[in-house]
Image (cartoon, rainbow, N blue to C red):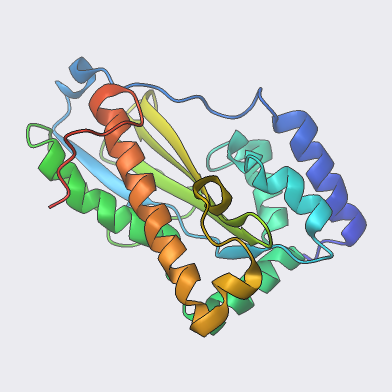
Length: 240
């Protein structure tokens, strides 16, 4: 269902008021003892909704959405899920889809999932067996076989802030008890990287592709680091 400009602004206001600070999920450090009774961990990724691109008409709404991507107020449902579905129909998503197709941009969640799945066993060889689900799952995914570790991402490109990504990873047990959770964000402007559309999209999106690669690396490193020691700092991370 299409969302009008008036409706989109209302969504932005509601996101800022309702989800700010109170509904966003906090990080949670993994307690090693929680893995003792687990035989295997199923690693999954939620469907990537595609890139969002800030346009002149979407600028008001994008402020509330992109800083700090408060759509993660509810993972896989609830008010956050409902608003997320509405925003998917917005002008930002349409512009983002056009950009993704034009520059052949990758499935961001898929790339994070792949890199994360490769680095997990190298960094945690004593963990239970990790089963990798190759296909993306929908928001109503229910794991039938116990513990699962999920990844979900949102990505937006704006003129001035550059690439902005927000990823949340969560591990739950068979009773849906959250064992671990970490949210990692990336923004080009925070690293003095190219931030203007004309820079990112030049040469068939060369710098945009580089930004995506960097965002994936920093995202996965942040997740691994938090699993290791509850911080974003990784001093001995094995990436080989």
